[in-house]
Image (tube, helix red, strand yellow):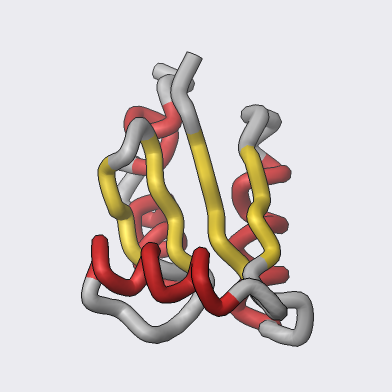
Length: 85
């Protein structure tokens, strides 16, 4: 089983859209709300260089954000990354 983590903020519409896509795939994932957790957000930013959310990781591989995972889905690559193939 893949270890899927998405870092979100509670007011972010892109976060909600990314969570919705992952939910629609029926895979278990961990959502970490960093709205008020600057320490965790800073640690994630150090890993990725990104200062935006959502940030999606599968088995510690950074996939990007909302647009990135939707693009992977349109290309038919997201299911493979999620281990659904």
